[in-house]
Amino acid sequence: MLEGEIQPPSADVRQLSSGMRVLSKADGTYFHMWFCGDGRLDFTIDSEGTQVSATWTLSVIEEVMALLLGPVLGFVLRLRGVLCLHACAVAIGGFAIAVLGSSGAGKSTLAAALARRGYAILSDDRVALNHCDREWQVLPGYPRLRLWPEAIQALYGSEKGLAQVFSFSKKRFVDLTDSSDGTAWRFHRQPLALGALYVLGERKIGLSAPAIEHMRPAMATVALMTHRTIATDHLQLASDKQAREFAGLSRVAMEVPTRRVICSDRLDALPQLCDAIVEDLSVVVNL
Image (tube, rainbow, N blue to C red; front, side, top):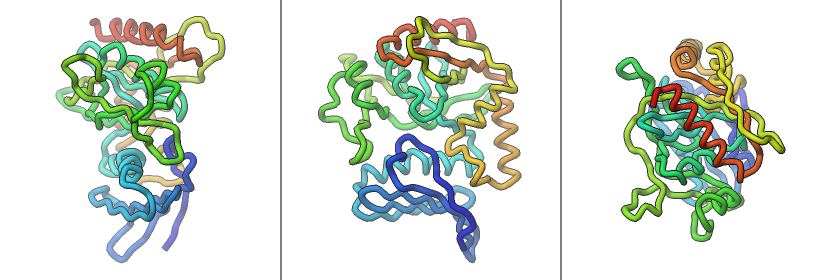
């Protein structure tokens, strides 16, 4: 029985006809996520996030995996009670930073700019958090970034030969693999303590220098709730899971420094932004 249907927000699927609905079956409640591009992709997830099934027509396996490791995985983690943010994570000085923001805010581009400086990537697009030994940790994701050609050309090189995320999209995958000659960007494969959270605000035209502002815990909690993966009020988790998620994100906001970042809309301003974030983190964690 169909109870409700919503559009899952994601920059990667904005050109797809997509949605989500709750299914009530004899053996329990399920969530149905569907995507229609060149073909049809259907994912069915049980209410505890322990089983995921997928069927598709026409779409290639690479597109199926992009969705599975993106919005589908994000929703599965939330169902399992894992705090999961729509963010990127980068390793700097033995700590992780998480960069949050709305779709198109420049999270992956900033992560790529930091990667170009030799900092390793922990995760792109989805950041899972774990509390261990009285600290919050970022869990590693999968070793690749999703970037637009303009960002690739400015930070990485030619996009020629890089796989497309979707057949209809210009966004490409950049693999993050270890390389002895230093030409490849690095991927950090172990959890790292979360040093700070950076929330990207609206990019401003003509801004001469980036600004980084402290966010009070109450406002930080709002930002974290806003930037949950598949953060929507139209499809609610069970009340007990909602309560635990809110309590967890509130605790993160209380215990981890959170900053609001105001930056330029120009790619050539990225070096200044990287400098500002690295400097800010050094103060926060006493590097």
